[in-house]
Image (tube, rainbow, N blue to C red):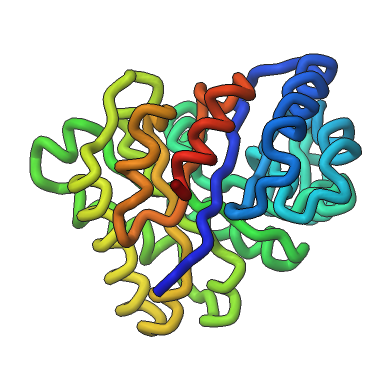
Amino acid sequence: MLRKKIIAANWKMNKTPSEGVILTQNLLKQLGDFDRADLVICPPFTSLASVNDLIKGHSHFSLGAQNLFYEKQGAYTGEISADMLRDAGCGYVIIGHSERREYFLETDEIVNRKIKAALAANLKSIVCVGEKLSVREDNGAETLIRNQIQKAFHDLSDEAMNHIIVAYEPVWAIGTGRNATPAQAQEVHNWIRDQIAKQFSTKVADQIRIQYGGSVKPENAKELLNQPDVDGALVGGASLEAASFTAIVKNSVG
């Protein structure tokens, strides 16, 4: 099934608002007319408004946030709600990134609650799953990833899954310069699609887009994203420079 590629730029805790404006302006110069892939820019919260102002009018560009809290409002100092993100112009939000799981102890159950909060606010979720090196070496990757999918999407409807993108992150490859081989990426993406088919339906599994995220670079993007079940990329470090992110985007559909 032909699925349009979706490439997301996760700036993480990088770029001040003024730096984010410069990066976005450069991206628009290079990709403003490139509509062969859906592009999602996920800056820090402080840059959401300024980035949104720049990308308005470019239908293939969308604004995404890097996180949200699952409650609608209340005494939760330092948190941000789905409604706040939607009002700021976001169409997407990253949920369950491996760094959130490791540093902030987010569980699959928390991921599930955040997805439901995003759905209630009409936000699309980029839901991250993936294994550490020790799990892969113990041949436990498939079991772990299937469990993450099962728990993250617990009690969701087929219709809700139309608003979900899955991002496979081999945790051992993030920021290390290592990356899964194209064959390894395809294998895991196939596991993910198979689990979604079992949990929902073949139709849902065929339609859902699954990104790869783990040291994606211009040099490896084409081979990785040419795999049949790899529908895009969640790009970290390489999204901090317009030239490298542009090259990944163009290589992904070349």
